[in-house]
Image (spheres, rainbow, N blue to C red):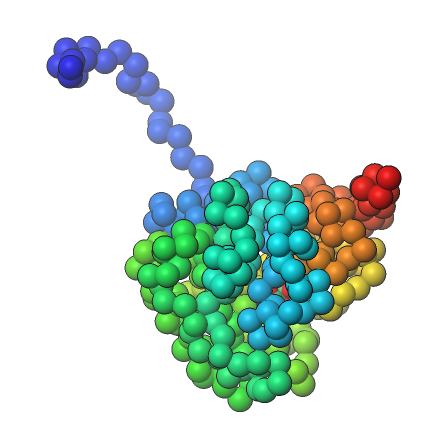
Length: 295
Ligand code: R5P
């Protein structure tokens, strides 16, 4: 039964204590609504401000890429070590257990294959379906300077507008066409365009010279893709340099799931991203976990 006396009998009003206020920990996201911030807080760890996203969406234009032939066998065992899963709705529904507590960033573009022009993409998921899947964010690529640049930018705008209606953030991926330079000027241009159009965070590639300028000029967080498989120490060094130069984490695929020991590699990457572990120490961690697993 409701207790009406309690309305007037409250004691602990905290008089004289200002209501606690902490700035939101995700760059450029202070003015966003609660639902949007809540989803971003599931992606970016509130302690480190960073994220380890595990990307395994490659099949949407590449088919069964090496390491992704059987996602149930190669990726599902990695889920406990990832902060976020990035995949297509097809794989999410068919392979990923619905009980996993990890946030999902949903690949929402498609319409081309690796045999054709990569920039020729369309929005490939309706926002209603993204909501049904309870995703933390949606994503598409922009291909700046490529033949279908305009369409790819329109795709991004469409996703941002539909996500904004429901408090779902959008990650813009700066796609690079097969023959395009991956240099600082290119990523300065592409990441800034994505942020200006309203992307809540942006995936870029790491560049050797001037990456810090890219993260500095982008008003929202940047995460880096891993790119082609590198020796583990090189991939860990790249992740270390990226976060040291302002990246808010990684959205890494091949350098994890194509590693000799994916379970060890994802934990080593997480140590770099969340604990600023130096590459040599992270590589030692990788070797130690790998050896344990091989016992
Ligand atoms: C492209 O297929 C996707 O956007 C991937 O999610 C992205 O390239 C990250 O994967 P990787 O680290 O393998 O480059």
